[in-house]
Amino acid sequence: MKKLLLLPALILGFSFACDQPYEEIAGIKIGCPYEGNLALGYKDKDDDQITHFSERMKDGFFDRVKIKVLDGNVEEISFLNLSKDHEDIKTGGDALFEALNERWGNADITQELNIETVYSFKNMDDSILYEIFAKRVLMEPVSSMTVVYTSKKMKDHIDSRKTSRYQQFQGF
Image (cartoon, rainbow, N blue to C red; front, side, top):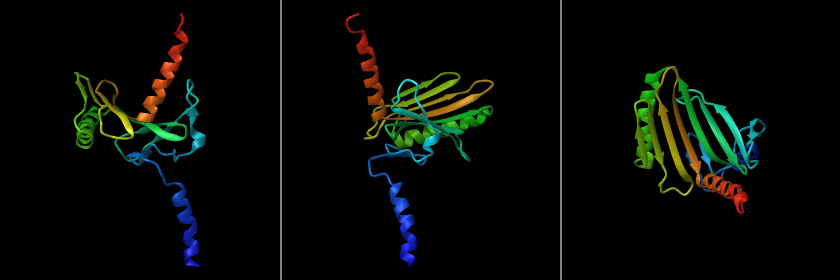
């Protein structure tokens, strides 16, 4: 009888498992089906293969995560923090840049201006991710920190859309 009681938990556990390669960032699996409430998404105005989701984050540095789902799978995630606490954004950004360098190696592009710092990782040895882009802006009245993880599938999809879109100009 006890074994029968465990059956629903096992079935539900396996139904949410991802059986394909993925990269997990903050509990979100890039390359796997979206696990949130599908009814809360909205279609991209220019591409009906992409659905957007936005979720609030609790008890962390980032306030919000935006998720792009391509053909049912999470293929891009963006983390955002907007704050009037400039020191929090500066300190948190420094810690984030250090963590990114530790996990992914040195950034391919590092741009540091007076108010803006940008890190871009593109030449990663990763089968799922194409790019990680991080940007910190320290400015009055609101500072921000953004990190975007884009999969290779999303990059290929965007490139193919651009190519087909511009083919209309042939013969002009």
